[in-house]
Image 1 (cartoon, rainbow, N blue to C red):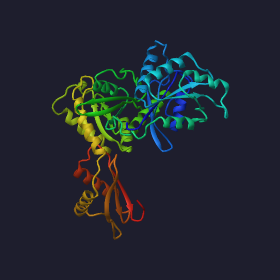
Image 2: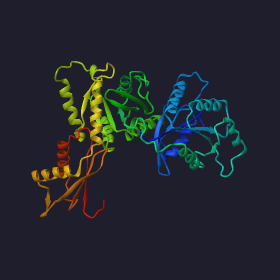
Image 3: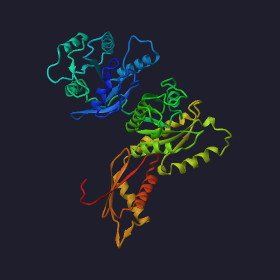
Image 4: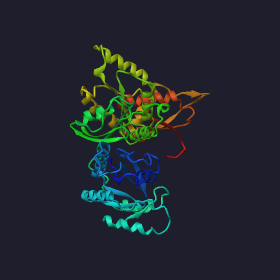
Length: 442
């Protein structure tokens, strides 16, 4: 991620997730009165006065607890602190400074990161109440009074945060890292794949559906390149999602797609293709992401022969006919068989998704394509394509300037798309063809 990272930390039930939702302008984090709802790190982009950064919500830190889940939440919060450029410590005006607040503040001071002290639940407008000044005892500088419910003081908070970020250092160390979202139905082996790639237990693996709640990030550096793998919660059909926590887990999985360059759509080889697989893949396609269909648990397929994989792939090509560009890979996350083949494929798909083609090369292709297959006509009026250019990448988008958009039929757009793919090898990425008449502006 090339954007600076700002972590929101604090003890449970001080309003971290509410503040996170208010600052990002979206209801992304689950907000409940029950402690421990947020477990892993939740990432979302945040913008203030033209400056952009990534905001990270974390689970409540309980330094004195030996509970297994709470200790894992504490570890996840520590990971967010280690990666953050600036840390916002959220406290609660109503409960005052607690022993846990002091312990968390001490832990943050040891990190030597820029800190911003936020006193939440200051819901009254005007001067803060006398108990507000108690928070100076934490030794973190001037506290900022905020109401995460009403939004009071959030502007001052963001001003202070942005003042502590060096936005000139946008080319961060991991700037060339390819972000890869692992998506799919529950229990297809997403977390197992991340653990296999990382070489250690980075995420909890269980046969119980719904073990993974949040989108968790794992950085991988190997001989193939530098990657950020995002493990996501399994996405079930909407009709089966009744629990509010699962609802937001699915929402976070879709968020992971939004911030990824490449999506690995995992399918269980023992179950085969399902309608839900097509819906998950369809979302990645609509967002313009590079896509790979990964068939996991290939070791569990019985009675295989030298044609089984070929026949399975042929069936999948029919099922994914709406994504005819997508490549397929077969492996076993449990045994590690052919998992290494995934990295060259990710590199190729990411490069194709970010490919830029010169206007000259595109117009040479256009002249050849229109000479080979004449543009359509209607009532004596024929489509004329004056020229073609590429205004953007991720996905590669091409604007065709024409005499009439109505004549630019979908079938001819598909023909041009296929010609571009064939000439420039754009496998694994969607392609956008946009028709524009002269005089419509840039």
